[in-house]
Image 1: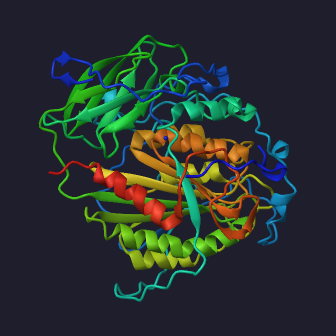
Image 2: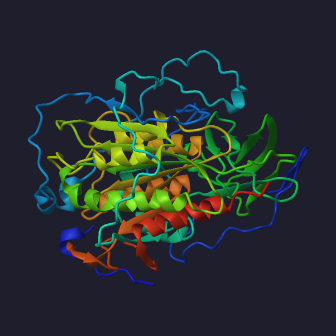
Image 3: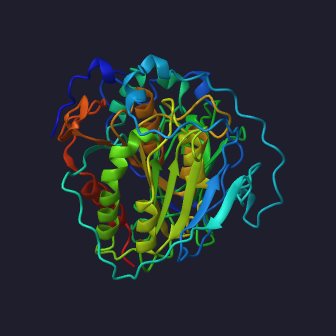
Length: 501
């Protein structure tokens, strides 16, 4: 286990209810940090936004394609293209103060909703005011010559990529303390200081994964989520309700059946809902998407991670659960670069996916923040995530925060959509990630029930020092492993929670 090293100046700064008989179980949440207690943080009004309509479409794909399909998101405000560069010098001259976050503007008024969905209104998951068909995208099938399935696998590079990991939901008090220690957090994300856990089980006490959840208040505030592989989800009332409602109505749906239950604000016990006769999946289905910052400063990481990602996919395929795997990839740069955001939709063809990954090059990125907001939105909203009984994981690798001065979308809106679609995010911070970027990555991972992963080095302040156990990030009590083994372990643990049919 490692203690967090001193940060240098250059790097400063995730109730039992029977039908008709609501009962709350007595299982308690883990204790919070002694210095910061859940609910103690007083978030500014900019983090309290009332949500009344879903901003996502429920995942419905039944299968993934044989060939990766490329959707390219055009730069909304094209600029003169910057010369290609792989220099890391833009990082060295930027201080945290130079990357200060702009005040967020209030979200725009949503336009009239589309025609009604066939789903009940209380659990409708339709997109309201936003279309993700192919508008604003260049849609084409990537011309790939698919290698045979028996194509030889390249040997991994000799230099491993090492990383550590923390679970900010397991040490939620420590996460609140981290946010409280940084002024930027008052202008970023949503208020998550109040947190409550929901768990859905069947009559035998087995977890019910991927159950649809809708939480509503009498004032019209509402949120949506899906349970993870372990049948649970974290609920954050202040993230969608700006009026501190005393109670909420929770509806859980799976396989056409709905169970309702009351939830009291500040309730310390887990709310456990029983859904009798819930259908269980016969085989694990895993949708795994990698979202990668492909700007020039990421050249070293991308070169090393090609082989790491290959190993990740290979090892996941060997897991005892024998998952049915679909793979997706999203890369992004910034305005004025050769491209803005590129996404390759889900495919089960590992060889074709590797060929796409091998073609990713790091270039561009003339300033520090990048198009992470747009890439995250594309990853969540535009890819064909599969429907019921799917475990959905997004691995996001970045070394810079998002551009917060651009118009919509914003990552805090997208992370609500990710929770609504049941997408768990593992955020990976590469070398050079500053405090703002760390806040953003940890917020996304914590809210969606994921983990915060960070690359480690022999010398925390010098990524060229090689693999090691040191980091500049404000974390403690972590162990170090190679990145591929760490991600495989997290996926294995996720799939191991699935009930045995």
